[in-house]
Length: 93
Image (tube, rainbow, N blue to C red):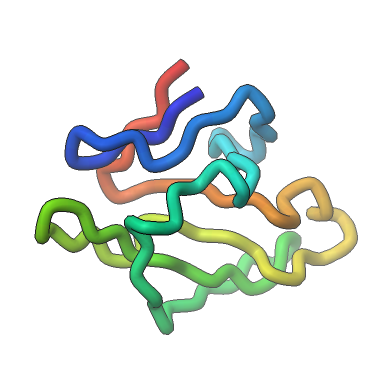
């Protein structure tokens, strides 16, 4: 599968974990050169606290488009060391 934003592949992997309709890619599949730090956090009752990255490609910023759980709750261990996308990032087979 591929994650694409602004015409650029930002992650690609066959090792995908599907949780609540979201495709979680291995963090190692993410092209770090497009990441920008973010201080944004959200909380999921069963997964725990999510952290975010923004994407910067060709001068365009997509704030908080990548999320991950640095320390997921035990029942959400399957998302550890993985990232998911939203805010216009297309995930395709």
